[in-house]
Length: 328
Image (cartoon, rainbow, N blue to C red; front, side, top):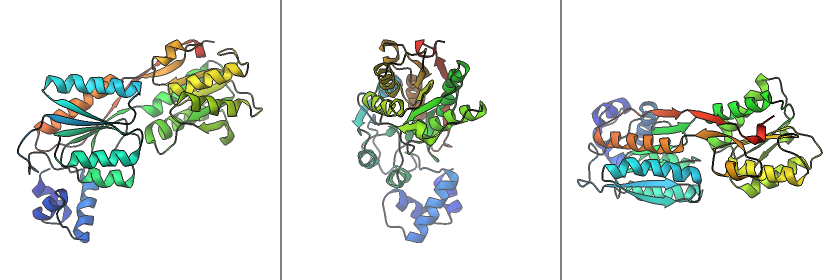
C-alpha cells in the first residue's frame, strides 16, 4: 500500500498523511482518522516514500531490555551476523527494563539517525503505541506480537503447555507456579495461560494462592518459592516462567529439605547455561534466540529494500530439553 492508497482509505489528503508522519500539524479529527486507518491496514511509510532524508547512515538501532541477559545476547549475535555482512553497524541501547527509557530511545531513533530499529520488547504502553505509529524508519519487534509491525516471536503459550504436560506425565499432580508480570504478554501472560491450560486438560485444579509473580531474577525466584513452600501446602510440580526463577526455586527446595526430582519436579523456559550448572540440572524449553535475531535482521533488510510491505509475524518453534529436575 502506498501513501495515495492509504490516504484514500483514511479519507484524508496525502499532505495530511505526510504531515502526520513528519510531525507537522494535523487536526484532531484527521489524526483520529489516520490512526484508525493504521490500525486497520497496518500501514507504515517506507523509508523511500517518506524520504525527507537522502543519505543512508548504515546504522541500525537495537533496543535491549537487559544488558546481562543471555537470551538478549544470543538475539543480538544473530542480528549482528546478518547486518554486519551487509555493511551495517549496530547502535545498542539498554533500557534496563524501563518502559520510559524504551520510549526515549524510540524517539531518538525516529529522528532519522538510524536506517532502522530492532526492538527486543517486553511491555507496550500507550506511549510506546504513540511513538511506534510515527516511526520514520522500519521497525522490527522481537519477542512480542504487535499489530501493524514486523515481529519475530517465540511460542510462549505452547512452550509452557509442553513443559507443564511433561511434568504431569512424570507424575506431578500438586502444582505451583512462579511467573512474571502479565503486562509482559509473552513471558507473563502467554506462559501462565499455557501452564493453566495444560492443568485444565489433565483435570488438575490449582488455587490462586499456589501462584506467585516474581521478577526476572534468581533471588526473586528463591523468595517466591520459599513463600510457597512455607505455606504449609505440599507441592510435587513447580513450573517457572524463566530459568533464573527456576534456579532460585531449586535452591529454595533444597533449603526446605525437598529432593528434586524425588519430592518435587521443576522446569523453566529459556534453556540458558544456568540449567546445566545448577546442583540438579534443570529441564527447560529451548528457544531459538539466535535464529530470532537472524530473522529479525532479515525482516529489517527486506523492509529497507521495498517501498512498502505487509507486516508479518513469524513464530519460531521450540524444543523441550529434559534434564535431572524432572527425571522420574
